[in-house]
Length: 482
Image (cartoon, rainbow, N blue to C red):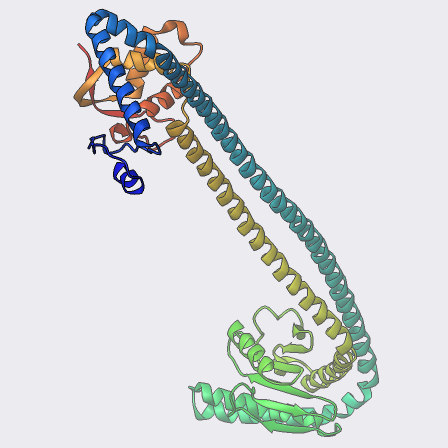
């Protein structure tokens, strides 16, 4: 800078080089005379200051420095005090905020669970109401169905009785005219039986069957004057019986049995199976010389195996006085029953529709019960989840926000009685010892709270938590102080 002025002005002077701290800057916008004056005054002040300081004692220097710095120390102490107050205030506000957040979370979870539970309860209630309605409807349909079947059964029995009575009277003359023909057929049949008995004393089952078929063929001649009559031998075909009696309006499946003992129930099941396999509405199980098991209380009896399929069981027809009359009477009964079956097709359709509706209703009730069971399982699962959330929140509060008035007291007691060791001590033993030592605060703290405080200041790796909620905690690697 002095060189700069020297170049600009023709001035004779000295060039002085001074060393100052590296991080300090000087702005000198003075002329050489002013620079000289500044340096002279500054150097004289510095010299006088050194002289003055050299005259002071060390105590005076310390007091002077203390006087000059006391204000700065007070300012720093005030600043530190303010910062500590701010930190305490921030910590209090943060604790309040955390507690508020936890309460808010608990309230939100509780409201969500209550809402879900209420929805499930409403849905279960509505399903139970539907179930009750369905059961009432089922009972009503069963009652209607029972009444319908009873009415139909009574009508059929009445009409069958009337038909039998009417045709017995109507065809008495015709049956009398056929009596001579029957007597001739009977004599022929007796001769054939006598001849066969003289030929062999043992008859195979096939031979007996042939005899029975031949005997029925002779009896069936009584229908030869009926409109459209035809006798078809089908014994070689499966599930067809022995014969088919064909008439103008309907056909009959016939199975003739020539047994020496009662016809067993297996033969009844067989003809039921054959009739169900066929499209015919009527079947006759005719026993020539013996009765039929469980259907032997009358010369012939009926059994309905479906709404449009009927079986007639004929007992010991060859032992009756007029076997052909019995067959003709059976034909007239079946003819009238066939009219009833055709007439009741619409009624049966309605009955089938009611049965189908009842089955559908049962399926719906079954599905509703299944849904109720699944919803109960879901509610149980949700309740279990909420319980787990409550436990987790308790653990969180115990680990991060434990603020308890007895914390300090329990911590001091712990330090006085417990030290590191190689054994385990249960929370139950600690609790009993703590109760004996602190009887004055037993009304303020219980065993569960004691365990919670223990979990707060004992590290997790030293804890053995119980499998049950109310079990005792084991503290590892500690022992009682002697």
